[in-house]
Length: 560
Image 1: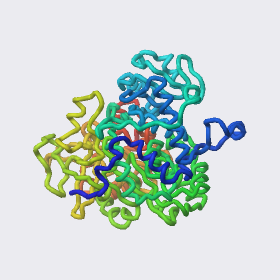
Image 2 (image 1 turned 90 degrees about the vertical axis):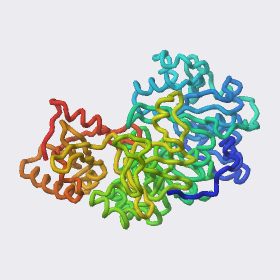
Image 3 (image 1 turned 60 degrees about the horizontal axis):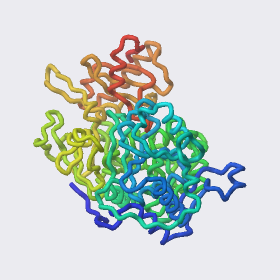
Image 4 (image 1 turned 180 degrees about the vertical axis):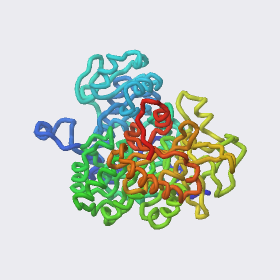
């Protein structure tokens, strides 16, 4: 099962910074990137580097200037560099500058928590650090995690022991030759959030990055006339490579579930945004705000959500808000993106009724040049492949797949089966070639039933059915004390309901999950609040941690 694409073997594989240079030649005066609104002082000092925006030619020139500065400070081809910038126009300038000289950018999500962050830094193998003063202050407080760092560069301020990128850039040339690289040379390391395990450094090659640009452009039919609102900051690198004008949100994206939807919607309207990506948690806030205020987004053609399953309700709300567009659920992972995609309209018209019967969540047709296979996940037998349409672990062969995890041979070996990348998800392909997601392999509930024997219950066979209840915020299927347990969080936050209300709620939930063939194996339904979620998207439920919490005596629970 594969799709074809005519965009392979292009020269960008040698160095992805050629994307930016070509856009600067094609559309030099076109607005490339727009940052946060200027304050009064910045508006007066408009000659300073804190520009609100850059054209593609200005972005190219600025990037060249930074590339010269990095070379003067000792960063060159192959140097691993930790990057801690605030989202803004200079972020793209710097990253493309690093690419131009053959440096390797290392991205670690600061929202993962201080302990996990320090552990990732220590394991990164970086010898250079560039970022805001805050990260340099952390370096002073926790020097053991930064002991391999020999080059420290500060932006947007000053820091003890760090050289200023601003000062290093003064008087340098804005012309530089792009370093020619092999297509399989590393351009970046992206640490996973650790939401489904220990954070790992995913290797991105120049070829992989290039293929992602072509695949995303084709999937979403993006043109140079589109305007991107980068609610996932790293995606702005792809948008600029395609020639899109990219707007940087003036909201805090560290915690997507806590953003101010009013400010975000104002920007979507005033900038006439046509394309945007981000966490379902963020877009849920936007959808609810637009619904309350009766606001429509007439210019927005595509809202692409990823990181966790998107509820049917969220797609439904956006059908009224996006009067000229649609929502999209993109399936993939840091290690392999994109794999598949489906629109909200397709879901509501073609697959939602099957999801309501326990079939899982359809994530759509495969992306260009992607092939998938299903593997017997119970025995973990790499020679035992599932027949087409049968359930198994999803394995993906794609030019956008990572070659592995940096410095972690064992994890790389476990994640690969020949050319295929093991997604760690359970799924199947239907007769039309669409991929269905059934849940994480590690979240599968294994039971022994006295009548049918071994039973495997996948989260997406049960949870979407319960989530369809008007009073349910979210649900999680976990195994607690050898019992298949459905844990529910209500929208009103109540779990100490009167017995009569609980009994009614219980009957309604049982009726819903009973539509799934696996619903009868759910032995317990509990009400709980404050589900543990991942740090990056604020929506992916940590079911293993939840199961552990539910097994503790001090946790207050109520049977529905």
